[in-house]
Image 1 (cartoon, rainbow, N blue to C red):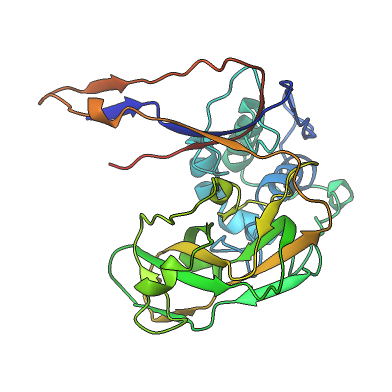
Image 2: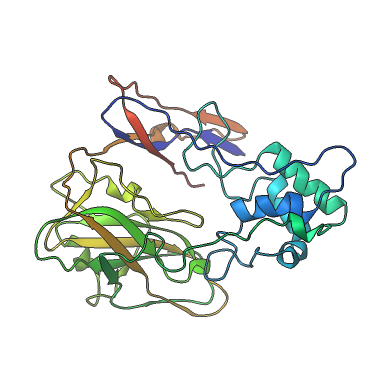
Length: 334
């Protein structure tokens, strides 16, 4: 049974609407009877779309930094790119492009297939582009403030997916404004995703059995006297780069504020210790604009008749003014 429904969390900024596009460099596509080679045709694709995650210390299970690396997994790469499992970019192609789109073109996918079919040839070393350079450690440079979870969480060797919440106490003596947050979730091989919720009341601490130990749970709510949609910006998943707030926006953190890091963890087959940290990048400029959270969902319609193979649920909302669309967060579960 397939279930199709439209559920989205949309973050918008109340200003004139704009469209943001990113033009990615396209690798040379070989034509005719010319043999496809790694150095000339495949390396530019791998270096742009794969190597950032497939390198030591990142989420990819094996490196993809050289011809030898890629040839070893050539058939697997051909399969997962053809099925669009990799790179992990889910939105369907439409007229408007996402600013951070990481989709392979049909030509690039065809090129990978041809390269594998022709024997995964290395080619002329003079055609090999420079290897990509990556920033090690904190991607935005040294943070103004680094906060680490007080106690590590012991992830069991086996079992189902685990959801664990770390409470990170922010050591501030006054109100500060944050321009960017970088999440280092621990061993990235074990983390499906992580996101931060702002706790201005300290209520999350009451769920800990011991101070600093954290608590379990997938769906958590943090009560607040102010509207905080910030957790939809403050997230990490494989392949993402830390998000810098646009001009005029910043996250307010007050004395006594906690940050709750909600992590989705997956066992590796052996016991693991997870102790994440986050970096805060501060600014002296208070926020003059704030994002608005628009949640579109129609869960009450999810009553699927027996035997139905295609079930569609939709919801819509017409905005009365022009806006900037900052992020879309579709989320669903079987």
